[in-house]
Image (cartoon, rainbow, N blue to C red; front, side, top):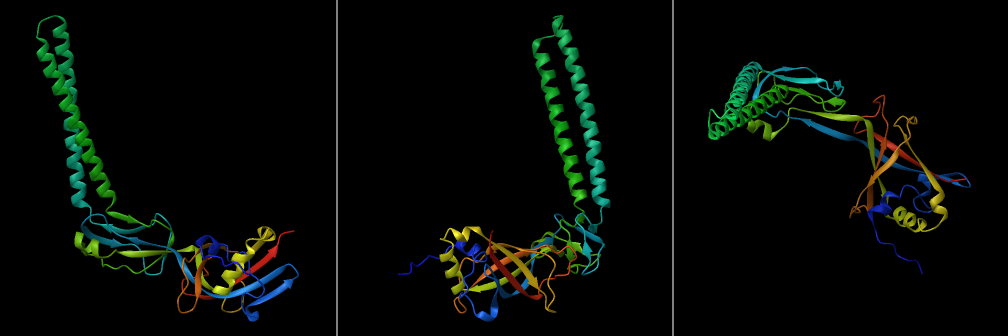
Length: 288
C-alpha cells in the first residue's frame, strides 16, 4: 500500500531536487545517461526586488536627475528638494547651540568660584548647590540644542533622495516644481527601482511531480543526488548563468493543481528583464 504524504512547505522546496521519470509527460523530460535526467517547465522572469522612493518631509521638488528606464547605481542622486529654508533653520539651530555652550562654560566657571569661596567659608553651602543646579541646566540646554542641530542636519540630508539599490528606475510620478505634502506622500511614492541582478524566474510544477518527489526523498539514495537549474531563452539559446531554487508556494492552484516555484539567477549583463517567457531546465543526477 502506498503511504500518502502530507503537503508541506519543506517538501515543496525540495521538489526540484528530485524528479521521477514518470512524474511529468515524456515531452518535457529526457534522460542524458543512466544516472541523469533533464526536465523542462515554462517560466516567466520576475523582479527579485522592487523599492519605492518616497520623501520623508514636505518640500518643493526642484530637480529630477534621471530619465525613465535609466540604470542607476546604489547611492545615485535621484531627487533634489529646495533647501534654502532648511539651511536657514540649520544655521539658527547651530547658533543656539553655540549660545548654550557659552552659557555652560559660564556656569561651570561660576561653580568653580563658588566652591572655592565655600572652601574658605565665605559663602554658604546653599549657594554652591544653586551654582551646581545652574550648571546642570546649562548642560541640559547644550544637549537639547545639539539634538536640534542633528535633527536639522538629518532633515536637510533627506531633502536629497538617493537610490537605495542598483537597478532600473521607472518614470517619476511627480514633476519638477511640485510641492510634496504629507497627504501626497501617504498616497504614493515618487518612483520605483527594480533590481535586475539577481533576477528570479517563476514557474509551476504539477501535483504528480510533487508527490513522486516527496516519496523519493525518503530513500537514502536521494540524499546523494544533485541538481542543475538553467534557462533556455525564447530564441533557443541557453542563458550562461546557473540558478538556484529559492522558494516554493504553500498551496496548489485549485483549477490547475499546480504549485508555484521560484528560482534565482545571476544577471550581471541585465539581459533578462521582468516579463520574459523562458524555459526552466532542471537536470537531476546522482552524485558519484
